[in-house]
Image (cartoon, rainbow, N blue to C red; front, side, top):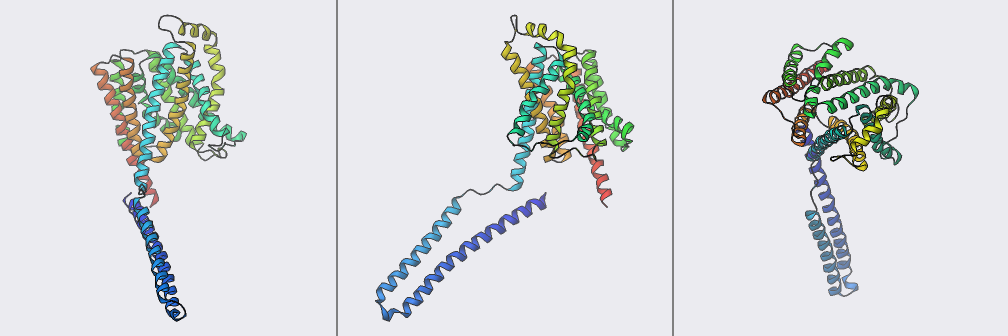
Length: 401
């Protein structure tokens, strides 16, 4: 990083010196032209009036010097360019801030939608559909390149999309059954499932400290669960299922890493394609499970003393779907812009911010034991991330030798 900043600074200095040198040469060339004219006039002074020649020479030199001074004044008053390092830091900070903000908006709007319309399958599906309102315009107006996929490409992505679908539905079901804060505490166990799943399916073996670092996560979740006032087995089991499903998504992604996924398939476009496939997969299940209840549930949500209007309920669903798509995309941008350790810390703090915000917004009662368990679990996630990144970097350095 220091070398990079130094190189950037050296390049900027060199560019400035080069520009100033060029400007100086231009001024000197102009003055040399005047001198040549002066020489010509001096040599010809016997052919014309001497006073007129000197006057022309004086005016020419004065014009050149004034132009040079004006150029210097204009350049000194122009704003200095932002250093590359500062611009990069600003960009990363913006990504992380948007990641947090979009995630908070999604979790709050999602919970409000589920409180009004407790149909987890339908809400999960409609969120994916409303997310398409962001995806397709970007392709239609050529803001992003349109992905080009063959049937083989779709087959390679399909297992990832299925796991993503299960994880999304399970998360929404958990958020609808228990407090938002409790769902996120349970979801902090995802690293535990990742390590176990990788060991079973990918035959990955991690250093002992990585396994040891999982213990605080498990202990914290246990303490938080037994003391959770909003605890339900549906909410707990759904959050655990989402951990299992997203672990499967990660494993399928690694297994299909070397398979071609089509043209214009960067991380953001890949996620967009997964969202589209997931919306198609989920549609028949959502209609089968919640279709018959939808009319009665919608009527109940839009009538009564504390009911929402049709437009309010629809806009809440739309906001939850749109911001689900947005926060996922910004998460990809943040991940690609920072060191894994920085991302791990930011991801851990994201859960802390969501938990605290949801407690204040929904006024969920919490006990001291619940807060302690949540803190232990979240701290465990951070410790695990730092330990794993340390050994990953060490292994990469050794393999590079």
